[in-house]
Image (cartoon, rainbow, N blue to C red; front, side, top):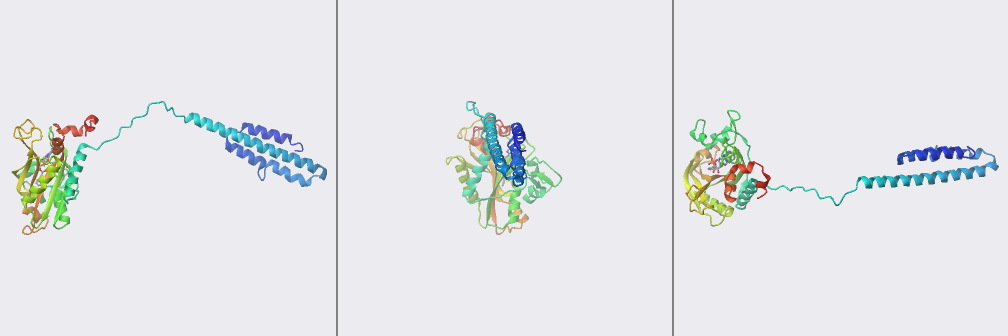
Amino acid sequence: MRDGASLKKSFLEELTKAASLTEIQQIRVKYLGKKGLLTSELKTLSTLPAEERRSFGKLINELKELIESEIASKESALSQEDLRKRLVSEAIDITLPGKYTPIGKEHPINKVLREITEIFVTMGFGVEEGPEVELDYYNFEALNMPKNHPARDMQDTFYITEDTVLRTHTSPVQIRGMEKRKPPLRFIVPGKVYRCDADITHTPMFHQVEGLMVDTDISFSDLKGVLEMFIHKMFSPETPVRFRPSFFPFTEPSAEVDIGCIFCKGGGCQVCKGSGWLEILGAGMVNPRVFEMVGYDPEVYTGFAFGMGVERITMLKYSIDDIRLFYENDIRFLRQF
Ligand code: FA5
C-alpha cells in the first residue's frame, strides 16, 4: 500500500457507486471492519523499520478519518434523498374534496324489534331464542296441531323434509322454553319466521315476537293488562285496545287484539277497511293440551301466550302501506327511520 493512494481510490469509487445504506455499511466493514483492508494494513505497522512507522501510522490514520467522514456524509446525503422521495410520494393534497363514507343505520324492523323487547324486559320478561329450521313436532304437534290437523293450513309452510320445516311462527319456542324449565316463567321470543305468502301485507320471511307467561294463577286479565301496557307504550297511552274472540289450537280461549286505527282515529278509512280497528296480534290462554305435552300439570298451572307480527307493528307505527319496502334495500327508504 505504502502511499495509500490505490486504497483511497478504490474506496472512493465504491462509495460513489453505493446506492443504499446497506451497501455503505458493507463498504465500512470492507475497509474498517476487524478484518478490513485498512485494519490489516495497521497490523503490519509493527513489522516496519522504526523510521517508517511514524509516517505510515500517520497515513493510516488520515485514511481512516477520510473513510469515516466520506461514509458519514454519503450516509447523510442518502437519508436526505430518502426523506425527500418519501415526502414527494406521501404528499397529501389537502385541497382535494374529502371522501364521503355513508354511515349505516339500524334497519326499521330491528329498531322496532329492539323497542318491543325493551318494553317487555322492563315488565320482567326474559328473552328466548329458538331454531329457524324447526322440527314439525315443535312447530305443530306439541302446539296441539297433530298431522292432518286442519289448522295447519292456516299457515303456508315451507317443508325441508317431512319432519322439518322453516318455522311458521315463534310459538315452537314456547314449547322449547317450557321443556327447559319449570314455572313460574315469563319470556318473549323475537325472531324470523317463514311462510309461503307474498303480497303488499305479507312477505315470505317476516318477524314475530312471541310472549309466554306461566304460573299457578295467571288469568285472562293478566294477559289484557300486559298487552294493554305494551300497546300504550309502543303507540300512545290513548290508543284504544280491543280483544276479539278468535281461534288458535294452542290457546283456549283465543283472541285477536286490535288497536284503534291510527290513520283515521276510528272514523273508518281505507287502511282499516272502514272498521276503525287494526289487528296487531293473536293471543290466548295456554291450552291445557300444550301443558300436557311439556309435562306441566294443567290442574296446577295456567298461562297466557301471544304472538305479534313485527312488520305489521312497524307499518302502523310509521304509516307504511307496503310491507315489501322493508326488504327492497332502497337506502332512501331505510334512511328515514
Ligand atoms: C300466529 O302465528 C300465532 N302463532 C300467534 C299466537 C301466538 C297466537 C301465541 C296465540 C298465542 P298468525 O298466523 O295470526 O298467528 O300470525 C301472527 C301475526 O303475524 C299476524 O297478525 C301478522 O301480523 C303476522 N303475519 C302473518 N303472516 C305474515 C306474512 N306473510 N308477512 C308478514 N306478517 C305476517
